Image 1 (cartoon, rainbow, N blue to C red):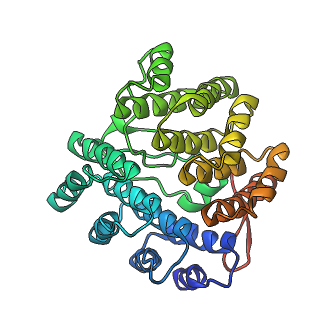
Image 2: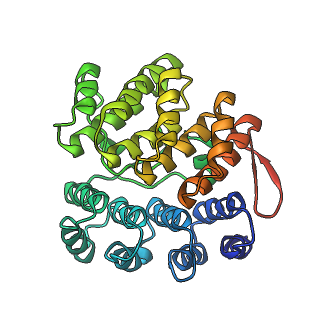
Length: 331
């Protein structure tokens, strides 16, 4: 199966949604052959799509593929590479949970990058590695995440890093005992430390897992972050979390649409907004995704194509495999 998925990932004649399906499959398999396929696609001389390259870096970090560390460092330090891809490589190094000197040294250098999303991400990843935090994933997430994880639970030995979601978070959530009003204040305050704002955001997300009403309340807060924050890095992660929550909150949904529509917004924010709208799968946003699937910015157009695929999967509760099989995704 890894061979078929690797072949599909390389095939630039396939629609982007099919190539992403192949990527998700490789991430779920997690074997050496899958890692090699993702590393090959991370090469800009082989793969022209920055969106796909960045997703490969993300997958390698979520898989905690130690064999990828050297290549992730190389791409992160390549100033000719797209900033979004370099950012994702830095985040992947933090997700590895390996306090290797080569990764720490590289992230330390990257903290001085003139590309803001790279320097900020490197700083977060470095702090996470030095803290020794290890995430433990569960089995909750969007169709994209469930298809990627394929019921694989991330290994971890630190209960403080536990999360009800599938992802390995770039920053550990604040303690569950932190008052909700404190979490809201921190995540909304643009003068707060970025590490703390991330931690507050993930704590809000985790606390909202129990019920739809708490999920909607969390989504409303995060929608306000999208409307007020000056940080593209934080806003792109907020979009990702809103996709995980899949809340019916109209306020959050409208904030995501505004991000997608705003051509002045950083492409990585618009990209995550598109995919979040796909995960939320509200019918009212389909037309927006179809419109921006024709956007002149390739990252945006490709993201909307993938988002429409995710939306179909959420609405039908299925995911189409690279071999053409249709699988019903458990809920």
